[in-house]
Image 1: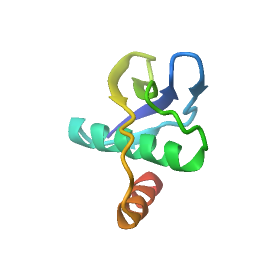
Image 2: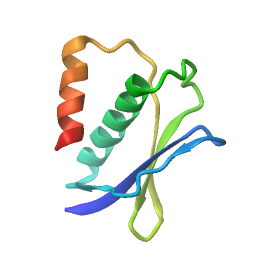
Image 3: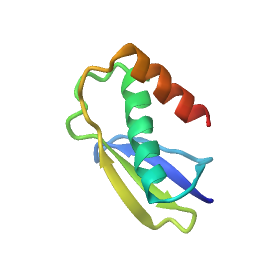
Image 4: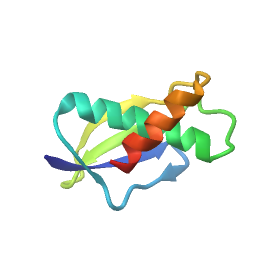
Length: 88
C-alpha cells in the first residue's frame, strides 16, 4: 500500500490533507478520491462545487490523479457507505 494525500481545491481555495491515506491500487485511489469529494461537499456549505476537484499527490508531491467533484444528490445509504470508506 502507498500513502497519498487528497487535497481539495477550486483553484483559489484549498483544503489540504496533511496526513494522507494508505491506498491499495489505482481503482482504490479513484474510489477514495470520490469519497473525499462527497464527504467535503456534505461537511461544508459551499453550494457551488462546479470548479472543485480532488488533487491526489504521492508523498514526493507529484500529482498522480485528479477527480472532479460530482454534484449529484446523495442517497442516504450512499452517504453512510462513503463515511465508512473515509474511516477505513
